Image (cartoon, rainbow, N blue to C red):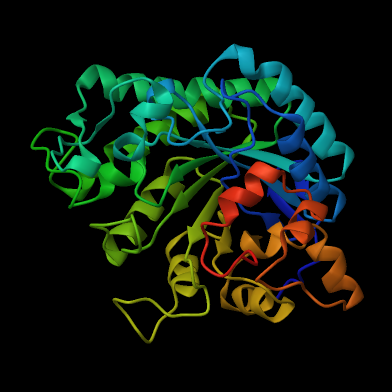
Length: 358
């Protein structure tokens, strides 16, 4: 078994210095138009300086109608390029690789933020989830937008991109038997429901053949991810591996637990057996300690992605290397500010139960 601090080759000549990633974190620190802010640059660069092998951006919208919250990073327009170039240069200066998480909110986009009507696989009429059914033009436009955003990130100097196919956002909505009620070639069978994510992977692979291409998946239902079956997700992972995916990012939320469908088996081991060894697996989900991380490597993961634990431990890799204690919640606001979170980000974090001291 490789160690946490062993290098990891993600693609030829693309090597992370270790197996510890910064997971994509919504932080609401970008400017209103989606351009990078100094606050967001500061937060991410501290993690590169703190020893993370790869830094991921927050979920960044590929189209304006997919924007889901205020202060969200944009990769949807060439006007974003100066900030993206600045980010790539600074993260590389800190010694880390950089990947952008590309996403479209679909049903979970916010018209109050985007200024545009939202759409998804199917129409929904619930007051909180009202949206129209996507047209063929919408779907093809989204595929192009993902590919164009990937090209933009490559032009800015990013090492890779990740397609957000988890958490009930657009790509996940099409996979879902709850959100996707279509009867055309985009719905019904798994082959049809997976068509959007498969064609998006193919388009992005063509657009950036030399960059690392990751896909994040929710293996089964949790939170906003609904209508997902473990065995179907395993089959989707196989399809995406055949389609050119380099990295599979499993969003487990609670990585210490086995799957719901197969309580005696763990998702990391199941997916490791499902995809070829050339496809690297990174696992996220309540990883706080060195022991938590090493448990995932023992199950077959190639790397781990830290979310909440990285917010208050910008130097988590170095703390672990030295044997220092990891800071745990609840956190005083002053601690989070010292760890690089802006005042606005701290206010957002107050919405997380028991994360910030009242």
